[in-house]
Structures are given as structure tokens and as C-alpha cells.
Length: 90
Image: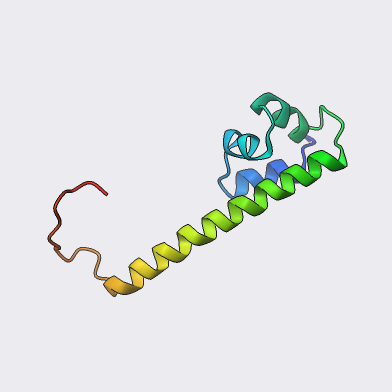
């Protein structure tokens, strides 16, 4: 059996990369990895930084998902219907 943290399980379950979370929280990848694996003592300050970083990611993803939902509903599920565009790039 391996010991890890809820953070690591949460991050991996929700497709958040170590790099993405480390940058948001202001940690190096290595430091965050050590925290996740319980190789460093955790502090209230670290918990707060990580909570704020995840809250920011949630808000960002919520906005992106809302836009995706709006676009999907606008097309009425007809995703393969041809459309005229100036370029094939997004």
C-alpha cells in the first residue's frame, strides 16, 4: 500500500497537471510533488495557497464549460453540419 494525499488523488482524478497547479499555487513542481507524497511538512499557508489555486482553476473551468455548453446548445447537436468559415483555424 502507498501513502499519498487527498490533493494528489483530487488533482489526478480531475485532470489537473502538477505543473498547472504548481504554477497557480506559486510552488515548484518538485516542491508540490514532495507535498503530495507527504515528503514535506504541510503548513496552513500551503493549504491556503493550494485551496486558492484550485478555486481559481474551478472558476476557469466553469467558464470554459459554460461556453462549451452554450455553443453546443446553439448548434442543436448538429455537429457534423457544414458551415462556412474564413479559416479552418479556431
